[in-house]
Amino acid sequence: MSSNAWLARAALSAAAAVCLLLGTHPASAAEHIVTIEGMQFSPASVTVQAGDEIVWVNKDLVAHTATATGRFDSRTIEPGHRWRYVARAPGTYPYGCTLHPTMKATLIVEKGHERRNTK
Image 1 (cartoon, rainbow, N blue to C red):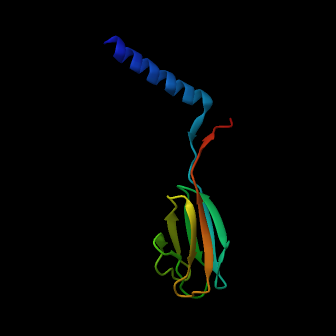
Image 2: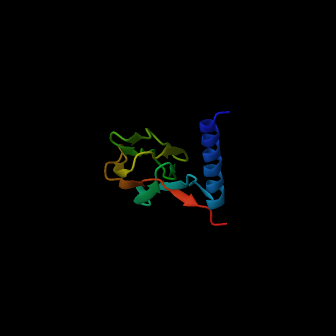
Image 3: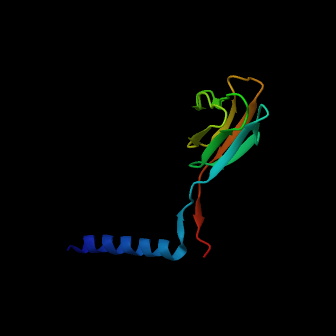
């Protein structure tokens, strides 16, 4: 093995050891629930990290949608059903129900981050 290859392997091994010692790893994705009930989204504003999953659960008596034009569209969520969406791009996304235009809410997606293992 050449000295350059050996140095590259040694550097990789050292970097892996540092990561293990510091306990850094990507933060795991979280799940956030938005309930649709009484002709409204609850909570009306939800803040998530990029990579998190949002689940809209329709507990109302009628069908609804969760639609942010150009970003996401659940299509029809029937009563008793749910729809999942993984937020990827940071930003603020007003959304609503296309079947009931007075129903409005906001999804705020923040940049994902690494977290430290606190053990």
